[in-house]
Amino acid sequence: MKQRHVYSLLVLLIALAAIIWYVNSSKKISSVREAAVAPETISGVGIEGTGGDRELNREKNRFTKPLDVTDLTIGDILRTPASLLEQAGKHKRENWPENATEYVEEEEHRGVRIEGYLVHAKESGPESCNGYSDSLRDYHIWISQSPTDDKSEGMIVEITPRWKVAHPNWRLHTIERLAGDHTRVRVTGWLMWDEEHPEEVGKSRATQWEIHPVTDFEVYSGSDWKTLDSY
Image (cartoon, helix red, strand yellow):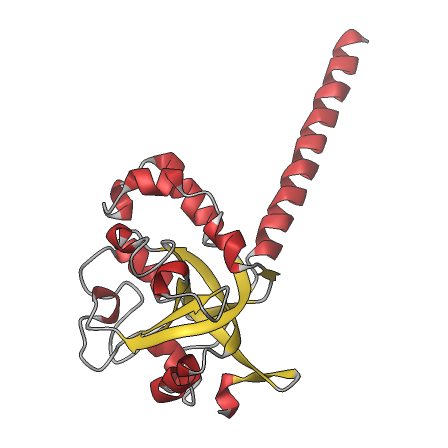
């Protein structure tokens, strides 16, 4: 009788563990729902790029859009903990401590949307994520909490070549014009930590957290939000 009781208890514990695993697994899957929109390969360049940090390049070159998005303020992002990532420094991600790797993977599975004001925009130079191609360049865009802030108080969001293909009307001259007017915008994409530029914090950016890549871009016009595609 005692053995049967122990066996029944063991079966119950196994069933309970399976239920807990299923619930947690389902939550994890639902939190990273995404849909492919942009091309995975562009001009022969895959998502790992050429050289550099291939794991970082894979994050920069995401070609899917998040289907679950959290609205955050720029202040929320500035306050997102980053001590583990700062300690990892500029080393390639494959050489990061395990706790830093686990933390950044969790954060970078977050689809986020922020609202702010365009401060500045420019085209980047050739980068490893884009195969060092002269024709494949990111748009670096600074967004701040206030229209009077400068770049050092804002955060960077980036439009990558893959998303330019998905949105051919996302043109740099349009974004630069809107930045000249410090236009109010709303940007959606993937939260990403860029470990390559710690020396820029406090000078040309307020944080190493970025939205990279940008998957949706809206402009406030009159009393409504309009997609950047319509400009």
